[in-house]
Image 1 (spheres, rainbow, N blue to C red):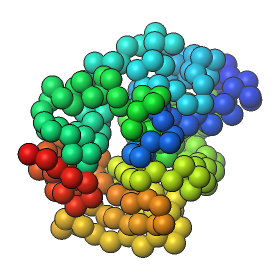
Image 2: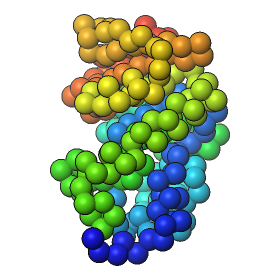
Image 3: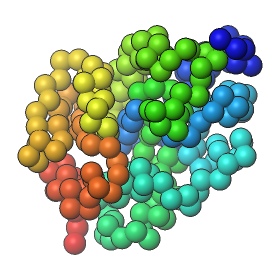
Length: 229
């Protein structure tokens, strides 16, 4: 493999990136991996980012702007959080856009955004880090077990009220985080739910408008939060 341009210490720092927002928040979101990413961006991230960042402040450190960027994943997160908090008008695009810009992943906000795998990638069909691991499968095999262990420890310590894991293909890996929790299908098997002493855990489809519609968000909020009309 070619030289990645990262020292051993810098790569370790990249793999220990935790996420965006407030780890003491009541709502945790766990996805598979961030979108975007390249070996060039990774070099900038490890030299500029702290282990926990603010969703809209950190990209400016590497020359990106995200505050009002249209990212369906973030928009669904915003609507879901507002709905479960009983925020009036949560289903309106303008409200979700404003929440995304001013609250989502904020240092003192209600959410913390983290990932099963720590390195960003444009898609599962693209592998930007061939200079570090030959393949995505090799990366998974080496990194995922430790990341699951870390997530298990952090959730136990921070005790969020809700842990919302999204991306159906990763449900088995998410379940590994919560040892001893029994999950059951809910809403005609569209989601799975489980509970431990401190948290309600929801396993949801990928956060696209097709898979997680306003109607499905309302159903989830009625079961686990409160929707006000």
